[in-house]
Length: 370
Image (cartoon, rainbow, N blue to C red; front, side):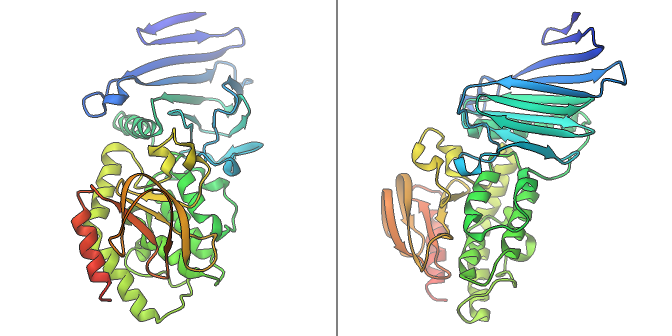
């Protein structure tokens, strides 16, 4: 028995005494994001008039291979089987075509991703929210705007978490870049990146820990625990004089403060993570979808921590455009590059047209004297 609640919402009462209210919210953000003129949220709210009906199972049919995995574009990170979501955690699944899905319940929640369908099992009352945007970047912004408006309306704050609970308790450091990139596809808040970075450092086993130190060197402040922002984590073993290395690390990161602050403001204003997988900004370039050796720090810095490789030679693929090697000022075009990347000088590049190019070059000059 459907009844129209408003022009954009309707309520359904089923013979089983299940109640469903659907709402559609079209969002016009063309003023500052022209590509997002058709952003929309479709929401379903479920409850029951009969206390004996306490669970709901929903199956959404989709396009096979639609990359609805919630953990980024890599096939090795596709979630298999049933996932039980911790109560009141903020967890979303993002797709490469610009959609996201969030389910909310005061009780138990689980979801599974099968080829061509999504299956949700939710304890009532429950909510399911589906966002539709034109790209992963727009989906991140839509997710952020929608959550911010929900808080203004008085919705209960969810704990700062993400798909982090799905990762194994003992992380393989070689997969650190892939996990951080995947986290940027889950609607994660800054605290989730900080927790994952802490877990990465704690999982260090003493072999080539310097590569993890370089991973921390290249990340924006907002994604790192406070103690890592101006010092090499004490848990890591490094191959040179620690006092000198610590001083150099601190001075380089302090020199980047202006850019780190820009990355944080951009995240707060647009919802785009300060640290992200390349496929968020380049979803149609299949070159990067399966890669886990490249990360963006904000829009202008890109780096490869080379965690899975041996030694200090790093080979990877640069995106379209011109990129300047952070340590030598040599200009590189898109395509495969190989650079020397010893401790303290990871494979780090910045856009040639970046408005912060002067800052990056000044830090290069300063670092060459340390």
